[in-house]
Image (cartoon, rainbow, N blue to C red; front, side, top):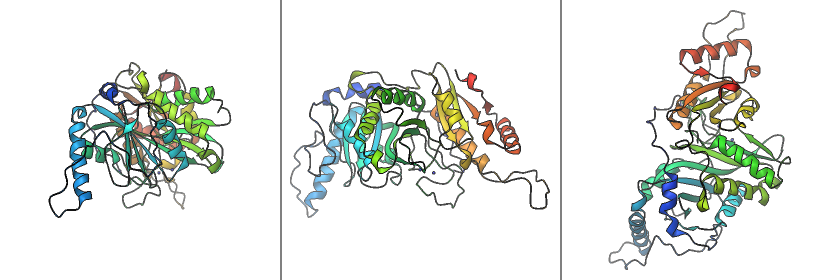
Length: 396
């Protein structure tokens, strides 16, 4: 599924997801939470409010009162960073993994966020469920912070994956549409020229996903793969999509949903474990791969990222690097190569650099995917921008 250049972002504080986990241990419950029911659940974030004494509707008073209670209850966690996981009821490949995750122990109803959304809390994870397309609800991380007072450290989306091949796949990828010009209409959310901060967990979680899927005998039926940077929605914190592909039969597969749920459970260290892919704790090897070139499934970059201890930022496939042929119709050669490829590279690089504070971002090129003039232009531009180029063995 697709800023000019993104604004320079300040260095993010190191994640404190584990602190948030311990903060919420008192909320654990063995009761299974259902997110498909329309019935109103009792919430530990609200108590019985007094009756309204004005002409304002009872429902308005109730909502305001509950929000005040939520802010008070959550005030202790204002400095603890939490992960926000988003799913939609409109997509079986999104709602099924969410249901599988919520069937695990420790969940409680979360704060009232929006009338058409439900939320759930477990240690340092917040699950947010809505009914729209997964790519249209912009700024959910910022909106969550404004309503709850909590600080969102990362955003994870469950979604379906579509492909012309119709092959079954479990995928991980960053989001953004850095190649689009201002005024372009993104076909699947986001905003032109924008690249989200890539979630540093992507590389470690891709490797974990492969292990879980193999253990549950979904491999080789399902391909485990990265995807290139594409689509929205707009987010402000490090973000990744976890997708099940590629047809309705596979989107509905409960075994695939359970694998994705287990990935999040283990990856975030819920239930007493240690989270995986924590850049603030595990960044001894500070080199981060910025993929440039190749197809949508980034096979050359995948070969590197599947190795242990490799970190991955944005992945720009050929379609995110629009380059105009320097030879015009008369056979004359232009010195400037048009297209938004430079803006795309700069946006992806800056976003990756902001997501990995202290890291060394190395461009990894799929050389065989470029023509000679394209490769020369890209390598020259990277040199101008002081972006180092890495070979596979530079990342190990």
